[in-house]
Image (tube, rainbow, N blue to C red; front, side, top):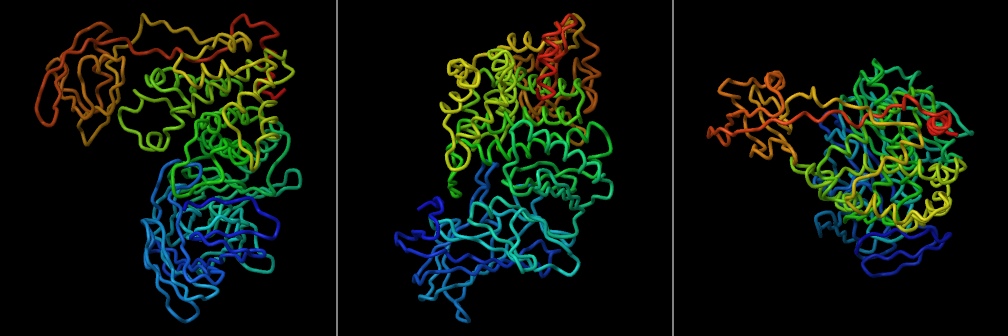
Length: 600
């Protein structure tokens, strides 16, 4: 039986465990205690006091994946030393599947489960424990009952002497120190915990506290600047969606020279490097990620595809609209930074150009529709290989570009009276919370915002491999793609390479390039061109000695056997997807663009 959380039914719930139904008044919580007796060994020790309702046997489990990161990650592989007791008496624990355990209770009303979790993966999807701090996520930490009820979960943290504070979006338990409460398992999974000596800043918007948290080496991070700009982003997001849907919010960043970020219902967890606020490009990148995860407060955490809740934490949850969940969020990330006054108009157009360029230069856009790329995320998006770009499309940039085109379509159809903001607000009102939307429902609400039926348009843009049509949006906003003179193009083989300890190794070969047409393979080592050696860092300089149309002889080593491959060079693809304002844009077109980027 997979775990499904039902709606809370006032104070009377039905718990179903191993086929036995038990009626209970206000379900007793599972109470966890987290200890770090030797944090330098990268372990957190977990003690879980679990109510049994008098059953002779209970079954517990650990999630195999975490929401927002769609890959089975087998968190149970880091669990060890699993024991259980009822009072002072040891009871039997037997592992029943890869991520489940059965506990013989002897009819005791409570059992205590103890286990250790090895925590040394510096990603936002897992745990990290060291002498200086701990970063814990719910899915890889907490073992819970196999049941279908909204049971409270409490967490108490015992701090090592050198650690001073716990930061989490979980609600503190009144009268307790470092004890927090979640109304259900979903919430504890969705609330990362940082423990150590973090740098924090706070601000309030609409009476709601926002906490900016940095843990790790934050000595070069300008926390005051970040907090001031994040407050502007919060205000810009409120302008898009109309209100703030959470009781409070934590912006949590690990300064650990890593990257990545993951959304949560009342917080986000991200990673960056110590120089994130030192240069403009780095800072805009940092804030772009932050804005993306923050906008998930609305798009995904509350307004969600119907498949994304209640969650089955043990199996894949397939969904075809991640291009909305992630792509539309990516679109708004750049808009928020512009409307907050952090990005310039040119920087916004450059960011949008990057999204378009990613879509239009990937061969897989002509193979896999973006809705199926979403469906296949469990087997492709988080397990990319050298051929992925040839067979699939990334739903982040394509979703963002679809959002841009849809925004223009709604604005044009309503003479500027409504926009994508309107459609997102209406969708939030109708499908947030326990409902969720189907693709057809999402298409319908956007059609209503536009005042015209867009189902056929969505079928073309999201459910087919037809090329996207930009003309309407460009004309409406007074934009064009920057003209590129291909007569001066550089010579081009195609594909990617890396310097492997002085060896020039081919890492990818894309369809439609001279390299794949000639027969170059991934993992070939390029030795020479026209019998003259090519150094690992010298390919670009060597190709500059040729022009498109020239035929060259490329010597490669394939599994240590030398061979010569003739390649006819092509023109390097120009940056033909860079947006700029029309030189003769009308006042009306300019007003349309300003309305988009200023939130009017």
